Length: 288
Ligand code: GUN
Image 1 (cartoon, rainbow, N blue to C red):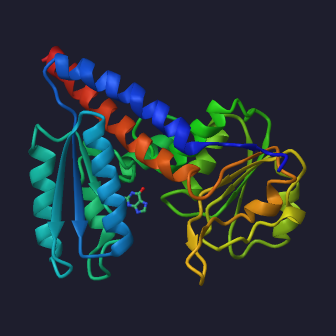
Image 2 (image 1 turned 90 degrees about the vertical axis):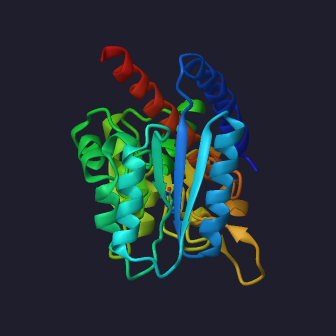
């Protein structure tokens, strides 16, 4: 392996330790940052994600709540819960774990979250602010990707950045954040022609497609920074990213592992956004 390993687990732990210090500071001023997770149904991966998010919130000294609804819960029930959490002064961050059961209108539910408590950065107001380059909550995984680049001192300004995937949760927001930092950004997707040729020109590659091992050594420019957001399970049960780590790590300059790369950063950024929301609440309290 010639690439430098981007140790997301270690970096996330450092960030979480710093967050724990800042949580103590707001607690001393009378506000305990509170995170409410809403889990609808029994999606196995979502249960694991939510459990990990709650555990990390508690470890950082935050108040954490889990609201579990039956997989057949109606839209009205979910909206009523979100409305309750919007008004609850103990809660600074609301996380509605996705995907939701098919019968529920995801947009209506996300739109119902107060933008001030939207620590997932999915509300259209926060998405619009990101597009306008204004301060607001941004989604946790893209924010984690940016923090990894920043931490490793990878030059973004003027870099050719290629984002694979165009989801609302990762691809689009990370592309906007890279653009904001003066990268030249290409977004590739399932209809992109000459994908390999585009990736070959990239100084930074962010893979967020959900297709196991699709990014191969031949596609990567020597020395490029490769950030792998994918989590895929192979038939033998092994967890792998969208990038062929074994081979690409021989050619890239920097690379994230899966697991232990971007994943831990998503949780750290959720805590960071929740802390910011609590700090904002404190400021509003002082002003009033
Ligand atoms: N499901 C997978 N990733 C995420 C995320 O970052 N936030 C939410 N709410 N659901 C998810």
